[in-house]
Image 1 (spheres, rainbow, N blue to C red):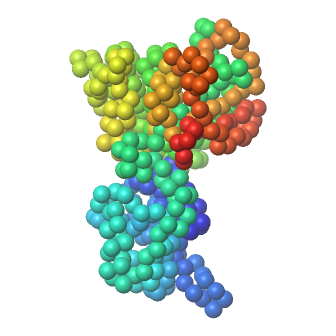
Image 2: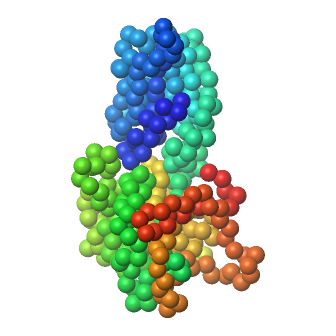
Image 3: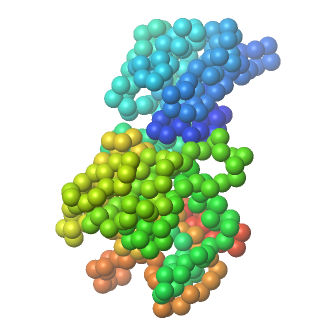
Length: 361
């Protein structure tokens, strides 16, 4: 199963909106178990992991053990059911890491296989498989995408000088890592404040040799009062684009999907409503790149699943702009509690990954 998960990970930046899935087919040989086929799901609309593995195994698939990181599908979608392909190949046993909660699967893959006399076992390396498919599982089970909040700061917690100058706080290796995060998330979300201040592209810009390993992410802007110009770089073609606002009469950017959202108590786009809308558009994960106000709102609303902070070895002083705005915190006990999950050096900068305390992975 570890090999199946490693194969699945190769689709980190390409399978959206489908889950990342790997498959390994094993049969007993004269010198012990032998891998006769393996594969991974590469892109939506293309064959699933089981199909690639079965093609590689050919006639040797009969009577084998199959290790697959997600329950084989049982329905006709963009591709035929993988459960049917496994049955037709005559495999003996199927070991699955995690069941597929998608309504058209949800145990039906197991049921088909068992009805055909194929032994099924699930739960092998389940935690690792869930982590790999966190966005897909979040969209199906929680009806909202997995949310990663990305922040970059100086060592004294500043994001920009008082005049707005912020390029570049972090170094080249940290910035390249952000582009890989964008590719893997498959969608980038920002606020009107950030778009108006910085006019970012929110695209993936990695070496062209790697282009087959990612696609340009969806670009999403929360623009409560319809202030973002239609000429903003974020609206350039090359990816799906979403403009979420509360202003029904505001002029929409050309060829950008517009949704009028509910207002929260402060007159801003309701964050839960925005995430629920994105789930209906098959957005599995969003990387949030924003200013202190939206960052604070997401944290206070307990909507951040993962927090990634790049800390540069610089001091910008107390006149510079802060990292997160958290109004209403008056006592130490009111703090937003985090748990560190990893830390690593990227060139001169420190990358810290955390989650909200008690939230789990």
